[in-house]
Length: 151
Image 1 (cartoon, rainbow, N blue to C red):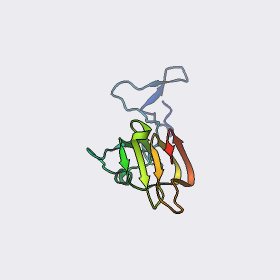
Image 2: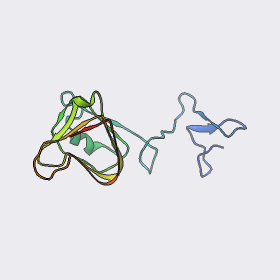
Image 3: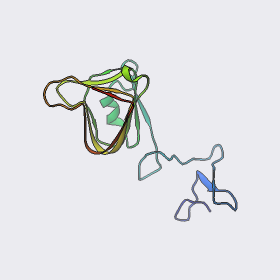
Image 4: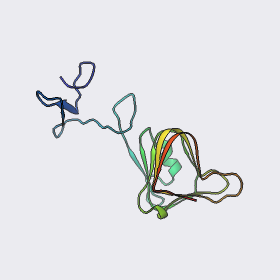
């Protein structure tokens, strides 16, 4: 028996004989992804790459439409002139230097966060508009902001 619950062994981890510690699955055996994922099934995390020249996603909004809970939206170098609304727990991660990955808006909020949790890492956020617009508006939940330049 393993530690799978409901009498089923866990396919990715199993106890060593006579010990309470766990060992990794052998090559070719399924493993358990401990990342964020679908609570109804096995946790899965997908990376969706945004590149304004080569794709497969050309805008952040396009990638976020496809993103599922726990997915990573990877931003490559570029200036993204779009407003971002985070409505499900995902990660938006810059790939490269923070000053080369810019999300900029004018006349609307730059990033609105309204979900349980998320990550925003390695990007520059700019709000260029006049009037009452936010560069980063966290309306609910917990957003982890790391290595960002917010102006």
